[in-house]
Length: 56
Image 1 (cartoon, helix red, strand yellow):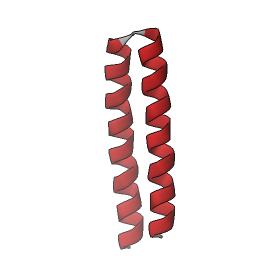
Image 2: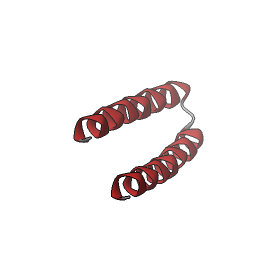
Image 3: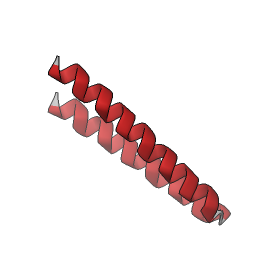
């Protein structure tokens, strides 16, 4: 279970890195800020779902 969690987070952080790189290349900081907030929100939702599933 911990291995899958590590894999999940490594994929997630690589996705965040690619997204930030794309936004820096475009130079659109407002879009980057919005995208980062959206990723954080999605990550919180996924973590909540994962925790609920592992608890019950």
